[in-house]
Image (cartoon, helix red, strand yellow):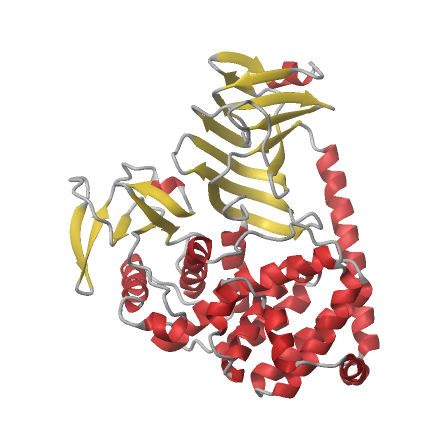
Length: 489
């Protein structure tokens, strides 16, 4: 399983910045490191008791780096003389102005190996600037490491969402958003019952696979959303942070994001608001209950216990109250726009000069980057426009750089893009021309290293066994193989 969706972190920051586009505060490196220090040390000083009991950052190192190659190491146990000891807000940490470890190649990584420790790596200026949103993403993403190591069900139960163009699903999702907006403005059990009635109705419409996708997104991303909201409400270190205002902007943006929101973004706000609702309802040990396997909707269903008759009655009232017909028109426009845009983009991709390369990456990789626009796809993947991205494996022996690529198609397991016909590939110290390779339909090469430097990409994969296959005019490189040389899931 991939540790991160490839473009997730950077897209998350861009999405958050758009919420606050009229009021963006920029931070210097010094100001940023002091804020990161306050966040990290706060969880050592009982902040976890107020946010999520047992969630402490300090047992593992945190490495914050910037575009100028400055690296700050919190809670790193080391005698490496290449580090310089410094003091930040009375906390002793390490600093290096030179990257001797390959840290700055990695935007985000939860388990970077250094000095026999697994550090959390985070690029402190992911978008080139340090903004309000950068710190939100740091707290949000850092909680995912806790989920990975402490939760019983972090792995997704579904990797596909196929109901994104279902008209009824979209309309009812819009109604859910509006109900949740009313709830956060005026905490009300009745609003939670309204939300549950609509949600359980949608469950029967979209099917198990799509519903499980929603439940997993709401739990993993929604709890992380709750964590960063609670953290900044408690610490009061980000000017004017307000949970209600933040979530209202999230809800407003979910309407403009439309189909993307149906597949991906709305589940952050739904899961985060449901966690807030559990606090409001005073549900005992709800955080522990979620960490051992239960999903938010199941917990809400048990708590509110709606009958089918009540669900039906509430749904009819809600359709009238939230102007179902107007939302239906909005949904149809969103569906048509989404389909037309995707069709146009795929036509552009197919007509683009170059040879398609499809890479099945090694397990355990992570990365980040920037993209002009991202479309979320029904198979759980993404289509990224004008994208720059780096993916690296923990041991640093596998690094893929994608640079200003017009189109990148990501599935749950692979990356597809086009490279120049003139690309030269070195496979186990033997030189190949990409054009000659693609002309050998059915060709298979087993390899232990691959390198290239192209117009849109560079790959440096040393001690990385894999299989190259030429099929239907495309070159496939599968690095996800077992010791017997067969592909693995």
